[in-house]
Image 1 (cartoon, rainbow, N blue to C red):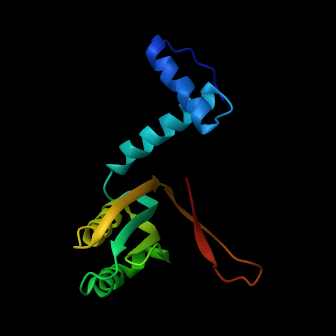
Image 2: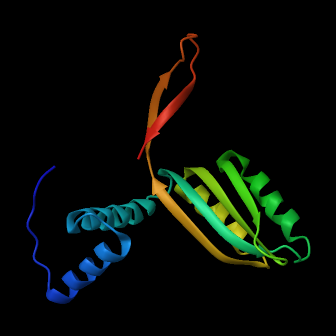
Image 3: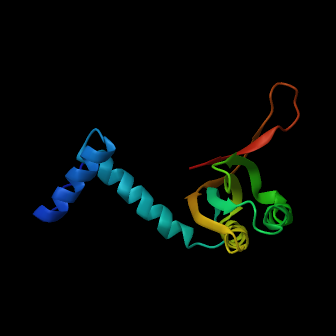
Length: 152
C-alpha cells in the first residue's frame, strides 16, 4: 500500500469527516478508499459486456394485474443471469424482491430494466459490482472440474 498526500478544501474535508463518523469508518483513509472503489465501479460499469455480480432490489404491488406472472416470466427469460431471488411480504399490498445476479453488465441492466419498468413496480435499485472473469478451474479431489473462480 502506498501513502499519498492530497489537498482538500475545508468544506469537502468536513463532508469526509461526516461520512467517517456517520458510517463508522476507522479512518479518513478507509472512507476515501471506499469512495474511490465506488467511483471506479461506476466507471467500470460503463464497460458494457464486462462481467459483474449485482443485486436488483425492488418493491411491487402484488395486486397489480398479472404482475407477479410477468416478473417471473422476465426472470425466466434471463434465467442464466440469476443466482437467487428472495421474496418478502412487506405488508398487505407490497412485496420486496432481491435478486442476486451474475453476468455481463449490459445483460444485467437489460434484465433490471425489463423488471423495473413493469406497471406496479416501485423503489427499484440496481447495484453492480464489476468482477474480473477468472478461468481458474479446480477439482475437489475427484479429478473432475468443479467450477471457475472470479475475483472482485
